[in-house]
Amino acid sequence: MRRPVYLDNHATTRTDPRVVAAMLPYFTEHYGNAASVSHRFGWEAEEAVEKAREQIARAIGAEPREIVFTSGATESNNLAIKGLAQAARRKGEHIVTANAEHKAVLDPVKALARQGWSVTVVACDEHGRVSPEAVEGALTDRTVLVSVMAANNEVGTLNPIGEIGRLCHERGIVFHTDAAQAVGKIPVDVQGDGVDLLSLSAHKFYGPKGIGALYVRRRDPLVRLQPLLDGGGHERGMRSGTLAVPLIVGLGAAIELAMGERDDEARRQRELRDRLHAAIAARIPGIRLNGHPVDRLPGNLNLSFADVDGEALMMAMRDVAVSSGSACSAANPEPSHVLRAMGLDEDLARSSLRFGLGRFTTEEEVDFAAESVGSAVEKLRGQGVAWSPR
Ligand SMILES: *Cc1c(COP(=O)(O)O)cnc(C)c1O
Image (cartoon, rainbow, N blue to C red):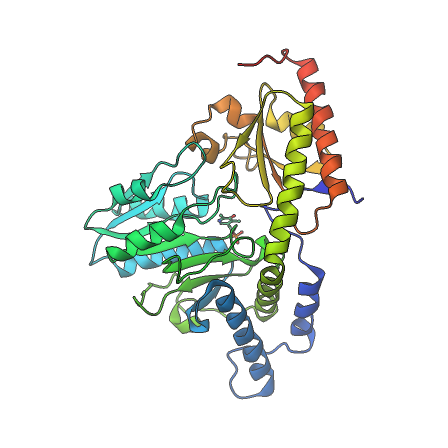
């Protein structure tokens, strides 16, 4: 077993060696610019890009021409939210989102609010789920955009995006979903779910970092966006800049692999995740599951450990790589806004750990992690206040 054990697959994933193999020739042999129309180098690159566009479109039920390549989900979210808001300014200035969204949605929305847009941030429930009724209650005749994530990156909770999409469409409101955690793991279908704009990122499904895509609906209705970048007019004017051909090839290969293995992997990871949960629960009293008990990503386990500081717990289990419910970075030691939005108090939010299982996680690793967490919690509780049920 390789150590440390990697259980942080919501932060990023290892690039699958099969994906790397697909990418390599596009660095050294087929290195053309996909926009070069006058020679074979350009044609080869363009062909590879169009193949990836088809692979992505197939995975989400879209058409290839509806896929815009970006640098990742952060850029896709910015392009979707700011681009739509700018383009729809004459129709209305109201945007609806939710409080458990990723910062890559909340911050662009905040930026628009500073520039005069009006924003409603809907509250999620205690499981981190956004109800269609809450979204419906927030809509006005000035609403132009609703943005609700498909799956939460901290607690794994799945949102009813099909229902939210339907009610947006009934009112002619554009629906965006940040599906960075969902694509390749659970079924996502832009037609069935009534999605107009969808963000995805390769490094969340065993592809390379620095490449993603935005789905932009072209029919029923045609969605128009104001680009963030002006330049050569690539990607039908929506995202100028020379296409990152090797990364795009990697994105396409990664999404095709993930789709092929999706349901088997979901079953396997769910079993391992439940095994980890049971092993920790059997050893340690006073744990609490965060996120939806059932409607949650198969590889996600987010737990609070009463009276233990999550950061200290992480430090005490150096051979297991996880995330805690507080510090996202050293510069930002705030307790997680997602856990706070779910109603956890600061202490409980600070006492939480996120285990993110993935394609390469083994049973042996899960057992090692459970043992590691168990002894670390016992050690910390032994040092601090005695644990007592509250
Ligand atoms: C990782 C993640 C992002 C950011 O994606 P990048 O490609 O790293 O920019 C945005 N939203 C969610 C839900 C994520 O999990």
